[in-house]
Image 1: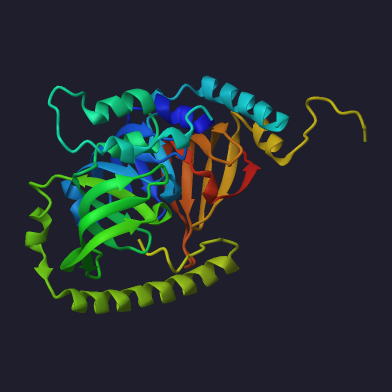
Image 2 (image 1 turned 60 degrees about the vertical axis):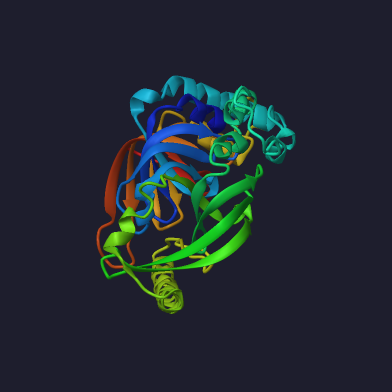
Length: 96
Length: 172
Length: 88
C-alpha cells in the first residue's frame, strides 16, 4: 500500500508515464487505485506516432500492469518521508 | 485494505435511466465515497465514447456502458480500427469495421481513454482509408515480422545476459 | 560466526534492499535495461523510487547503451530482475 499512498500524494502533479511498449505519456495525475492503475488528464504523447488517436483523448486510464516507469519532479517527493515509510512498510511486511 | 473492492458496484449506479436534474452528479457522489478506486477513475467515462487499447494491439472505439474493479468493460457500438505504419513508424493508412457489443476482460486492457468527439476523427483526414480485410492482412504480416525480429533480438540479448522477454500476445 | 540474532542482522532478501535506502543501487530490469540511482523507497513487490537516476538501454548490437537521465522515477516491481549496491 506504500506506493498507493505515494501516488496519492502526487495527485494533480505533472508526471510522465512510460509503458512497457516504450510509449511515453505526459500529463496531470488525476487518480490512482490499489493496483496502481493511473488516471491522467491533459495528456500528450512524448515520442510516438503509433497511436494517433491519442491526440483526441482528454483523459486516459492506464492499467498499472502495463507501466514500466513513472517519471516525476523531484520537488514533489519528500525523500526522507518516503525512506521512513519504506522502513515502516518493511517492518509491517516482515511481521506478517 | 481499507477500500474493499467488493463494496464498489458501478452497475447499481447506472440503473436510474430517467435523469433528475436536482440529483447529485453520479460521478461526484462516487468520487466522494470511493476516491482512489478503479471505479472512481473510470466512472466519469461511462456512457461516453472511449477508445480501448488491448494487449494484442487492437484499438477499439465504442461507448463504455459498464465496468468493474478489474477494469472488465462492456462496450457498445464498437468499431475496431487498424492503423498501418510506414517504416518510420508513422501511421499512413487505416481500416475499420463495425463489431457491435464487446465485453473486454480487464487483464487485456492497456489503456482506456475518453475521446473528445469533436476531434476524434481529425487525425484520420491525413490517413488513407483501406478496406478492413486488407488492413487485417497487412497487420498480420507486420505482426509476424515483429514476432520474428523480437525473437532474434531476444536471443542475441540473452547471450549478453540481458532479458528481453517478448510475449507473442503483447503486440500493443 | 555468531548465532545471535540482532535486529541489524539480515533476515530476509528484501532486508538487503532496506540497507540500501538513501544509497546508490543498480537495478537490472526486463527489456534489456538497467537503472542506477539513489534508492528513496521500495515495497515488497520491488516497486521502487530512485532519484538522480540514469537508465541504460542495451541493444543487441555491439554498441554503447543509450543513457537517459531522470531526476526522480518510480520503477514498477514486475520489471525488476535484481538489485545490487552500486558505487557513484
